Image (cartoon, rainbow, N blue to C red; front, side, top):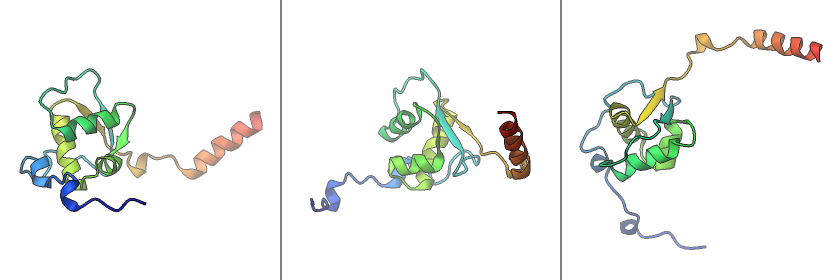
Length: 120
């Protein structure tokens, strides 16, 4: 088992550096379970390493804001600022979660399942 690296070797970047001094995202629609997808063929010129990494993470498919924060190893507040910047620049799309009122009723789903089973 290798010992943990000293703190100064971890490449620690302060959150205010990553967010360019901002503490709040420009958008309030970034719920923890909102899905983030990359816009194809957008140039990555001039983006910070963290923003590039965020785009690379969601290119294969959608990830939630919470998953993005975990993969980036950044606090949720910092991730939200980065993602809101990427939405503003047109690099990513964020799809809000489906409200509970629009989710299918469990009883209706059971009836559909029962109907499918009776046909096959």
